[in-house]
Structure formats: C-alpha cells, structure tokens
Amino acid sequence: MTGMQDHLKPTPIIDFDHPAVLKKAKELAGKSQDQTEIARSCFEFVRDEIKHSYDHRMNPVTLKASEVLEHRTGYCYAKSHLLAALLRASSIPAGICYQRLSRDDNAEEGPFCLHALNAVHLEDIGWYRIDARGNKEGVNAQFNPPHEKLAYEIRIEGEADLPEIWANPLPIVVEVLRKYKSYDEVYENLPDVLLISKK
Image 1 (cartoon, rainbow, N blue to C red):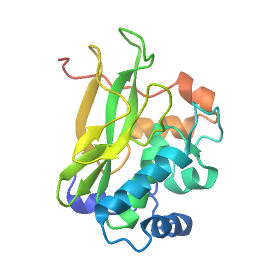
Image 2 (spheres, rainbow, N blue to C red):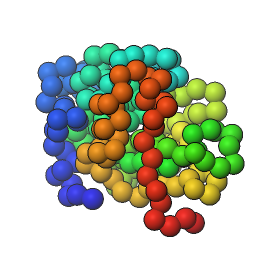
Image 3 (cartoon, rainbow, N blue to C red):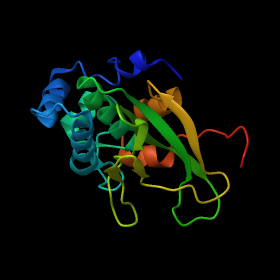
C-alpha cells in the first residue's frame, strides 16, 4: 500500500504521460468538472471499447496503458492499467486491485488465477472498486457509486477479494504479460498467488 500521491503519478506501465493517453483522457473528460462523471466516462470507455483479449481471441498481448489504447485490446490486467492511466490523467486517484478466482466460472474448486480491477477515489465516497474487464453473458459490471457491481463475486473456498489498492501492477502480472506473446499463451499461464489464510 502506498500514499495517495502514488495513485496520481505516471509510471512506465500506467503511462498517462504518453500523448495518446493524455489526448483520450481529455476527450473523455470533455468540459466536465465532475470527478464522478469523468470516472464513469473513463470506465465505460475501457469496459466497452477495449476488447478483452481472450473473449475476442485478440493479439497482441498488451501491458502498458498506451499499448492497450493503441491496439484496443488487453487482458483484465492491461485494461486496469489503461483505466488507471485515464483516471490519473484527469487528476483522479486510481489504483489496481486483484481478486483470486477459479479459472472455470462453474467450477467448485481451482485451479485459480488473479483477476485485475480498479479502485478509484471519489470525493464523496472514498475508494470505490470498478471492473472494466468487459461485459459478456454472466458478467455485468457497472459504475453505480456507492454501490459496487463487479464482474465477479467470490463464490467458493480459495477465491478471495484481495484488499490492497496498488499504485503499480504486481510483478507477477507484469512478468506474464511480458513473457508470453499471444493471448492463448497468456491464458495457459495466468498469474496466481497463494492465500496466507483461507476464510
């Protein structure tokens, strides 16, 4: 966990100092001064206009926010990097959160993998989690503060909402997105972490 200022800075991966990311952030904000409305606009753009790599069987594998924007595709991890970048570009604090989920939506056990989403700090609410992975049958994530409507709920033992709000993506996530060159290779090697304790 880090201080609020760290959730406003550009990084090599959340590269909102890239001209294309800055331009898109300004376009999404328009003339609005309302942080909640700007956050909604950014969320809906990433959710609806950036295609989830596995859902749409799309390459290349993207990592940096600017790459995700350029190629209009990314895994949940990469989409969270772009959403954080767009929000930070509008001076809205944003971080990355993770869930640990079963790889099979219908399974009653593992194997498990990490799933990435975002937290945005809204003035009247505080930290609010949003998930822009992209909706599909059985997935209906929405922006409706203060009520959370994420893509996935925790269903079974071994799954978990990880509580941290990270200023930068986890190294294990970065490693996977750098190492593998196609969406199917990433899918076969999705990152995971072991839980310290199971509830």
